[in-house]
Image: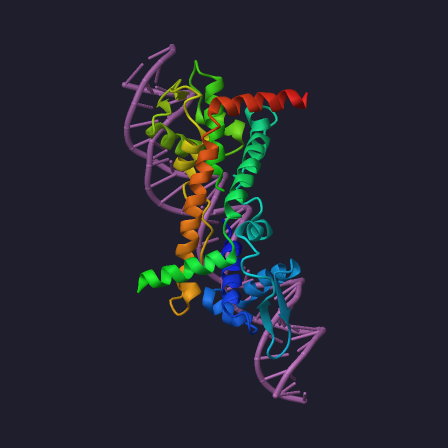
Length: 141
Length: 141
DNA sequence: ACTAACTGTAATTTTAATAGTTACAGTAAA
DNA sequence: TTTACTGTAACTATTAAAATTACAGTTAGT
């Protein structure tokens, strides 16, 4: 899967650790080891969904608005990576019963599979991720 | 996800429809609209796992050995696409608690998620896929 | 024995997807 | 009015996926 998902989760987790002040795309980008423009693109989408606020100009940046325990990984997946589970299918070949229908059969199966994935990802919210991050950090010491 | 999975399922489904004779990589490739060499590579792996047999030389090709209801989509997924669900993560940044641990946190979460996907994909075997293909075909008429 | 039709696999080239970079307009604070 | 930001579009570079070429090995038919 796409790294947009990872970057969205990463950014939200970081913002949830710094709820009192704005974080710039540069700071987040450095934490995630990617280009600031990517962060701005992804956070721009998250802003449109109401998870964060942004502010332009000096002292501006991004800030978490909702509660870290109110946004789960499934919501983030849907926004950043919907359909990523679907296996790629070559062009349909109408001359063959298998070639003509495989794509739509697998599409149905993996649409269901994605729903199941959703049930699973719903169990994790940003607060959970933050706690897991802290846990891993302690284990490493 | 990778199209190797689709091509493996496609090939096995096709072979299950023609259990009495050898099918060449050219014929399968045409049905799937891809290059014959890709089919040979993928079927070579399936052969090593014992799902099919192959034969070189004139009149050779590939043939299904096991029963179509004995091989399920999870087995094929594991062979062709294990780990595909894992979201891509940029390099870890050890200077930041989030950057240092996000990768391993998401890896854990998505390893679990892949197991759940496994439980789901186990429900479908090649015979089921073949029936779904036939069903779609009838619907289209 | 020779040829034609296959698989098996490595090496190379092409294409597509992903990510990075540049550029610049707009905004807000000092 | 300068500096530090976001917001986006356009472009370039990198990486991953797929196609292509090439050729050795196998088998059946003649």
